[in-house]
Length: 240
Image 1 (spheres, rainbow, N blue to C red):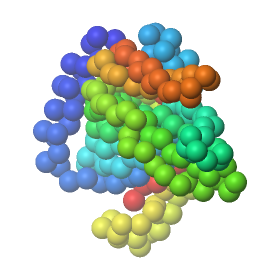
Image 2 (cartoon, one colour):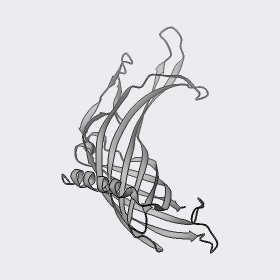
Image 3 (cartoon, rainbow, N blue to C red):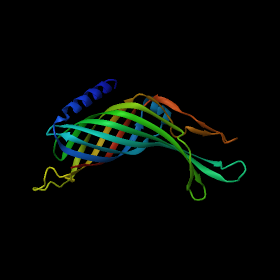
Image 4 (cartoon, one colour):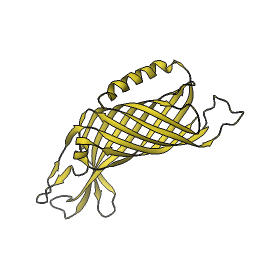
């Protein structure tokens, strides 16, 4: 996996240099994702994270070369507790701390230019972003009555490689359709498997918020490790 970073960097640079040719195929996708942590990251979190992703990009000319940008977000867990609103008023409130991981990625892909079934391989590089935010809610109606400042936030570089496939489920290429019109011409079911590695980061996940039952004091157990994980995605991609 140590070779992934130089491979990703080189491929992305070559992709940018190849961008002088006009894009023939614009596309956008939306996916549901499962993130499976491995190694030390798995030991610290144990939970599988679920989330979604959005991607947009284009394929150059009649080549298999595709360049895109992607945003993913996954929930790493929620810590919930009930505490007194104050020492003088006998009213309890719910306090929820949500732990979220986001990704901003540049994607370089080699994909079959056309066909009903279009397999591809890809390299990714970008950043992981971690955020934990606390919300205080009224127990009677569940409405939020206060939002604390961020409990924790951090970021770190990430890179990875993967493979996937598109399966065409409809086509709308009318004979008189202009190639300059930006309208949906094909739709695909998308499936992919990826492996991510990256720099060490500090983060929180489910179980990081510990409450002392004696005095309701709160301890935030932040964890540190390289961010290594598998990502499995399924979704829809449209070609314009």
